[in-house]
Amino acid sequence: MATNQVGYIGSGPLFIGKRSGGKMRFVGQVPEFKLDITEETKELKDYVKGSGLAESVSFISKVEASITFASADVHNLVLALRGVEDATSATPVTSEAHTAYPGGLVELQGVSPKSVSVTIAPAAHAVTTAYTVGQLVKPTAGTHFYKCKVAGTSGASVPSWQTDGTDTSDGTVTWTDMGLMALTSSDYEINSAGLFISANSTKIDEEGTPVEVSYTTSAGYNIQALVGAGEEYRVVFAGKNFARNGKGLKVVMYRVVFSPTKELGLISDEFAKLTLTAKVLSDDTKTGTDISAFCEIDMEAV
Image (cartoon, rainbow, N blue to C red; front, side):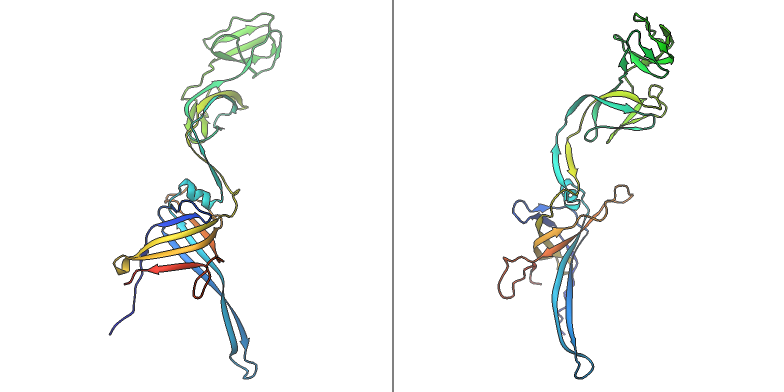
């Protein structure tokens, strides 16, 4: 007996582009792509017979699509976050002022800083000036910095600064040599957000220490999330039916508006996935008898 059974196992690339024109972009791996059609029904009970229906009318109330992206490239993230992206170039930054804390992050501009150098940036030493315990100064010359050990007033002339870790007398003030102003790799770790200051650094005070950081940002992209308008897109699926020897299947959606993703997993043991839902809107330019205003499907003969 002949059969009209046609199994379907779908796979293939998905392309998304702005409805206003431009590139239809390949979006990478898509584990799931679904079309969801909601029907609304109006019914009139048969009041003459007392049971059943006298009339029933149904119509399409909405059409939605669900797409799961397995590629977290910048364009998919912009789509998922309804964002705006901007390409960023590698940019040198010189002597950027920050306050560092032991066991804390010093956040820098951009991402993944390179060629990093960090120096303590205390105020310059001044003569005949009152100082309190814990204040930091740097001499007018030299590479060491000093912490006030005994409060008082500095002398009328510049002291002879010790550079061997011992104390320096300055009027009624006593200063302790804290070492070189330049920090070493033992004082901090570089990460994608900036610098993590070692909790064991002897140069960074728990109350906060002024530092200057010079570095170069990495080239990349900046995404401002949830600031973009609800752009309309076209979606084209260039599929194959592997249950029928890879016969071709093409799906075109004319007007698609994506909602922002409900969640974005940033820490996980698994590959990240972005699941987006979208409204498939009616395209008023698609007119005529038996012409869909939502989408069309072309299938290769089995």
